[in-house]
Image (cartoon, rainbow, N blue to C red; front, top):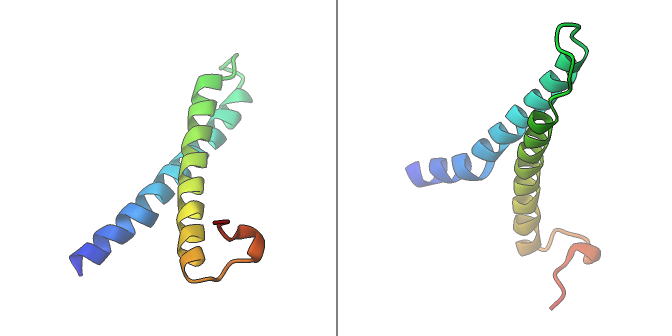
Length: 82
């Protein structure tokens, strides 16, 4: 039971939390750009957050695609070519 819980945490929750935090940081960076007291766009923070968001999203999507390929639930164009 504990092993299944840890597996769900590693595969879904941790990458999902990273993606959500990256999206929140991107949103905050864009909103801070329109703040009259800050006169510059924090590009480094925005691109770091974009990388976090894309990492989490791609990790979860890749795992779901891998799991569906094993069960033959994908279209022929997503099948692995041997």
